[in-house]
Amino acid sequence: MPGLVDAAETTASLTVKDNRTGESYEIPIQHNAVNAIDFKKIKAPEDLENPGDHTEYGLRLLDPGFSNTAVMESAVTHVDGNKGTIQYRGHNIVDLIGKKQFADITFLLIWGHLPSDEEKAKFEKDIATVPLPDQSVFDVIKSFPPTSPPITVITAGLAALVGSEPENVPSYVAKNLYQGQMRTVDKTIIRVISQYPVVIAAAYCHANGRAFTPPEADGSFVENLLLMMGHVDAETGRPNPLHVDCLERLWVLTADHEMTNSTAGFLHTASSLADPISCMIASLQSGWGILHGGAIEVAYKHLQSIESVENVPQVIEIVKSGKVRLFGYGHRIYKVVDPRSVFIREILSELGESAKDDDVLAIAFEIDRIANSDEYFTKRGLKANADLFASFVYKAIGFPPDFILPLSCCSRVQGLMGHWREAMNSPPRIWRPQQVYTGDLDKPAPPSEEDEEAFALPVEVEIPDAREGRRGSINFLAIPVSSQSGESHDKE
Image (cartoon, rainbow, N blue to C red; front, side, top):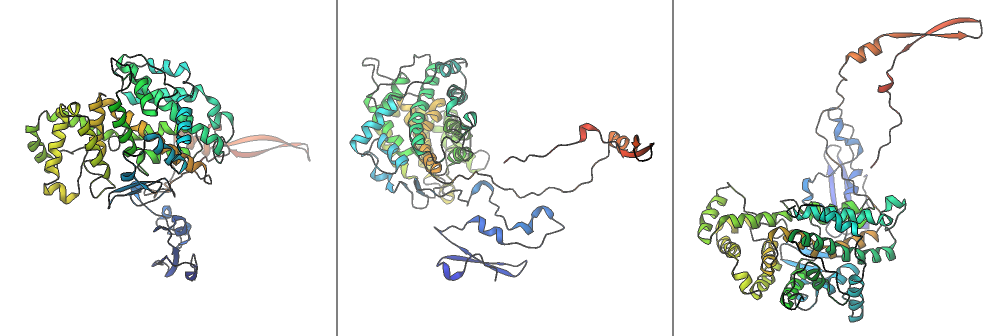
């Protein structure tokens, strides 16, 4: 029997019988997963009617949207959507929220353990004392109209950051800078964590006509972000301690969420061994889509359009009729209440009047009250996305809706760095998905006037016959120079 693994060698396995050939295969199961590459050994004779299926090359796995495909092994974050739990490096967030600061969680996600007091102090100081980006980064940001979508400005600022530090770009210096180079990776992580919020703060200041304030060496990550953005108390010139505390706890909850679309976008780019800022740009653009992070901004604006709590029942009926989509509800992972939601509501409660005065939040709470009891929502498991209520935290602190996503992305940098370090400490393997081709093959080449003229007429070329001193002729087919092709170089 052409098995992949002897059944005696594994206690967990999958037996597959290929009804095309009658052959059976034993495929090992590890961590409740099978390795897709094992299926390539399940082959069948070539299907002459459907040659594009490549049956002779081995079985492929089709999974549009990666709904049941794991692309890597990771020890960073575990999300159980059925039980409603999130764990960072084995620590349940319930045991971390309110007990550990954002710097502790950042260190935990990246280096795998909670830091000592000395490690934490050094870590925060290292981040705060990274030199500011080159002036060209600030100039690029200021070149945009203040009304530009923030993500476009931040993207340009990050691109300028890459351009101002070409020595950090592997292709530019023509060498591997990061894969397996863990000392360089650790230094780079500090640089990225420091520079990314600087770009966001500079974009925010430009959009709001504020002066950018450099970070302070003894400030925490969150304190320095608010300071740089000019989001400070008018009397003290310092960030509001309540706002700092609320963001600290919110960002503990949102620091990482396993393999999201934007995390996958980051790691897909990183698999080619690009520099991490370029990977951040890829992640940022992925997160901007309205089916991902951009959905929260859309949801907020949709809630604004409802105008009052009295209009909510009518909106609910329109949603149930299938005419519109209720953004901010439903999650691909969670089948129960998102465990972050309870804590986010507590944070909103602590923000007091700032949150209570938000009419949009009142509308959101009323929708949530109805959705939690209405059969249409309960049968479909449609719960409010935790990020929706997180957006109200930013709003209560005083940030405009169009900066909710950039700030949310700022809270995710630390998780991305944890995934990046893990990837750079693993054997290199570029992410290159396959496809199942469903189009036509081997269509006849359409004739053209040039082809008919060029290939139909022989060209007589005289050549000397050295042996007999006579001139002879040979007929060649005239091939137009423009149609000739040189050596093909296929690039992955």
